Length: 369
Image 1 (cartoon, rainbow, N blue to C red):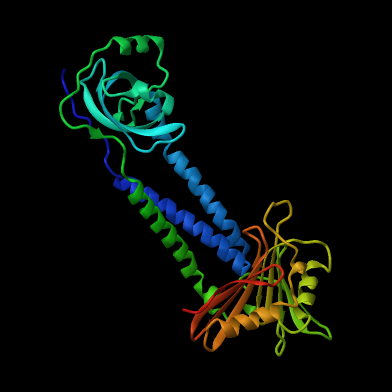
Image 2 (cartoon, one colour; image 1 turned 120 degrees about the horizontal axis):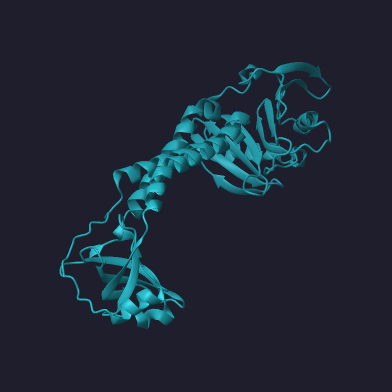
């Protein structure tokens, strides 16, 4: 019997690692863009995150179309194989992962040895003992994808029953690719770097932006100034899905009743508009409303626990170990299902955050490090 050597891939190819890194980068950047957009109230970022992921998935699919067409044009080969040895990895109630050492004898090609792992039902283990001849199938250009045929045709079943094969000499080549760890680490690195790139680009607005000046709004707006007995504001509407209220000098969004009245001025006092996120700073309120006809995890901004928010901000400023706190930001959203309120504080002692539920009860603290 003539013996040939089959050389399946034994690890992740550089191209596979590059694809994993790129995929991870796109996923990380998309998620970070969506979260940062919700935090800052930037609709373009909120839309850009899912859009980038969708476009990449489409391009990835199109790029692999020629390869899938070539592979699909080649009919798989069917051959007889002798079980040289087997090793059961774990015993389960139904399917058992079994590692097989096989001698494969194609009709029109030299025989070769290969090692694969395949699940076998416990009731069929007796039919897969060493010395048994089985029917296998594999792509002609990728023999390392060989699989044992569980239900062969009667013709091949008769051939296997009457065949007498001898083990091929030499060690069995391992067909199971061991690229899971390297690929996973490369993809994770891409996710982290992609997310870090978005945060780095938006770091000025996330951590060091001067929130006292309403002129810092990133898009052209139409403004109208109003004054009441409670507070002085400049109400600014950037688009049909974003509302902003900037407070005049000497007034804080945390003054009694101010935040509630500002939210109601943006929601029309009771038209039921749902918000994707609410961002509150010392003298600035931004509400990103859910677009009409779009299903999103939104909430009624009037349902915020307004009476608890000043105390939560004060607790975040004084109990989380931030020395000389300079800026703070409160954001409310329900991306994870339930309404979540997060308060971040930045100062000379670093950054810290506090998280509360929709009733204003603190559920998590992240002190300064």
